[in-house]
Amino acid sequence: MDFWLQIVANGLLLGGVYALSAVAFSLEWGVLNIVNLAHGSFIMLGAYLTWMLFTSPLRVDPLLSAPVDFALLGGLGFLMQRLLLNRVMRGQFFLTLLLTFGIDQVLVNTGILLWTADPRAVTPAYSSRSLALGALTIPYTRLAVLAVAVGITVALASFMRHTRLGRAINATGMDLDAASLMGVRLPVVFALTMGLGCGLAGLAGAFYSLNFPFSPQIGGDLTLRAFVVTCLGGLGNMYGPLLGGLALGMVESVASVVVGSGAVDATAFVILVLILALRPQGLGGRAVA
Amino acid sequence: MLAAAAAAVPGVLSGYALREATTILMFMALALSWNLIGGLCGYPSFGNVAFFGIGAYATAGLVANLHWPFGAALAAAAAAAVAFAAAIGPVVLRLHGHYFAIATLGTAQALGQIVIMVPWVGGPNGVILRVPFAPSAADFYYYMAGAVAAALLITYAVLRGSWGYACRMIRQDEVAAAASGVNTTFYKTACWALSGFVAALVGGVYALWITFVNPPSVFDPVISLTMVVLALVGGAGTLWGPVLGAFVVENIDQYLWARLLTAHTLFLGVVIVVIVLFLPRGLWPYLAGGEGLTWRSLFEGARRLRV
Image (tube, rainbow over all chains, first blue to last red):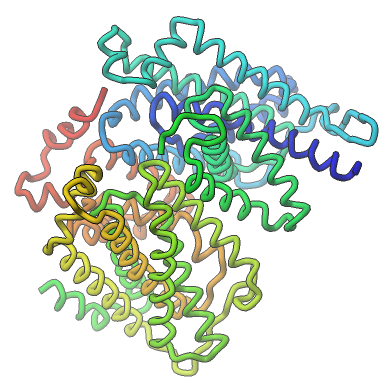
């Protein structure tokens, strides 16, 4: 019983990681209709920025560098949308898909040139500590990720509902031309949305670096996971990524025990295909497929 | 004339250069394979490597474990890919846009993971192929050339008949196509299966050529993405576009690979970005349409699609 309780707890904590990394992906997809294949690489860049600050003479704590990651990668995302993606927004959807794939290749290879392909880790003193809750062991860093994932989700949902910019972003996602006619400046709103998304990806990178070793090539896997999470949770619902992330974390945690850890990826993809075939609107989203 | 020039290549080139030429032919056939579903029907598959992998693995398994002759194994492998396409087609082809793209990507990834769990084909270790009479390097060049010819013939046959009209309708407006009596499920599944047939042929030849298959090499998602890139660079939906795209990009890629080993994928990324921004319709329409490639035309595409 204790064993299974731990498995469930592990699943929820892993789900926090997935949810945090999928919030931004889902925002970009839902509003801009861009499946950002460079998303995982922005998380990677966030992790490396954190690592560079942590290993610098200042030894900046990862929790303090998270806002720095948000600002810097947010800026990079803003420029990426403004200078590149905005130029093909009215084209067929796979132009943006291909463009972000090209950008991803550039980011991954720049990462390899800058930092080599060796795995790195960020290990402050508290990274190995964990909370003992009865028979359960809960690492603090994982708990922090789950808390931040919930916090970001709630904050983003209220930002989208209650602020002027949030409403403009929402309106753009619903109907591009109508929003434009209501005076929303599309190029700017697109760039701000992408900036927000990439900034959140960078922030997720800071927390990723606290929990896992990373190399410049981690992006592809993270992007795929974010996709699965978004499909699971459903598009167009601010709480979808959280729901989907926790669901995927649970499934993978249980699958690693039941079918073996080698089959975890296959399980995730089989679930993805099944979800798309049987319930394309996800667990709690609008019908899109 | 083109065919005669291609046929003469093994007489002129040898060793490394012949190998490069064979690789270029391989990517031409793969780009044509993607074009059948992604270009003609507008269903951007990001998992065509699944068929390539099925072709390679089925051929390798049958030749290495059951000692089938290569030709029979290749035919069985192509049949297996067609059967797989027909089985999953009606499910994944119900999806559109991003969902279709990622469902195919996921299917290919899952297949690669599942193959690792099959001991008959060596699990994670893969299969080593040893055949008593290995074909020569020139033979492999001709095999790949044969795959390109087969892919061109199939594409030509599809494009010129009523089938081609059905595909174009599906690409432009599937609902309208269905409403005017086109059996869309049939046509797109058939194109998907033909696409799988071509990719499996290439995969089978590749397996015997490289003499070794394992899941990371023949289910590599980069192969799927390369097919998309090559077809788009040349011009998706046209007969010759994918051939041109594969010729141009693979030549540049091999040139750079020999000189800038570490930076060549970075360069490929830059090429993709530039192509998408400046040539969203690919190279072929400019050359074939007599418009010519001018500075004006380069910026025209970007102006039309921007917000």
